[in-house]
Length: 252
Image 1 (cartoon, rainbow, N blue to C red):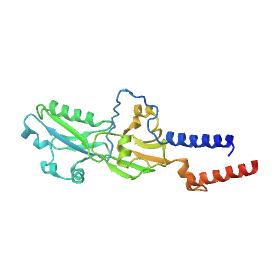
Image 2 (cartoon, one colour):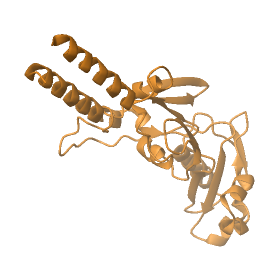
Image 3 (cartoon, rainbow, N blue to C red):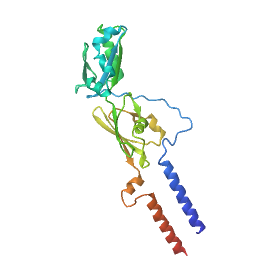
Image 4 (cartoon, rainbow, N blue to C red):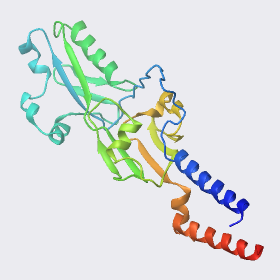
């Protein structure tokens, strides 16, 4: 084989190797030690959210009328959802003794403070303790992941990488530099293109998954081509080999 042709094939092989690596690795531009402030993006309570609200006090017995049955403590999450506080279309909930409270444009933390202040100012309880949790948080993950589906999470927030971990990570055919996150906020639908290979992802609101987000992992070029005329990398390699052989024969 001519020396120039050998060098050409070697360069092509190296390029395939490099492009393959660049298309697979996450956070490629991260240094050995990278420090950045952790951002917390609170999400407002929306209609049809199901809230678990627990009210305590310095005298536990005094708080009993302000809570739903304690028998629910040992129930399943699905039962808790049925017995939780469903946010109405008017952005309100109705609590025992306290009555109706508006949750419009309020986060979970803000609602905790509202209930706590109401208990204090209306002389309901002394030293009240209020905890509000969202029971029906879920994220839907579709496309080139190993286990697509809809996943529930009980934490107040999870990261995009945690969500992808629920789905078994991206397949080898997932397009890591162009993942779609679809988010509905205050009646407006937002679509963001996320690059998992860049560290600036960590400083965006889309690094933190919000309830009802949809994550779609696009197929990469190789997968798209495999659905058409070029079936796989092996086919490409075979075609390339034939072309090189033809060039060698014609060069003689």
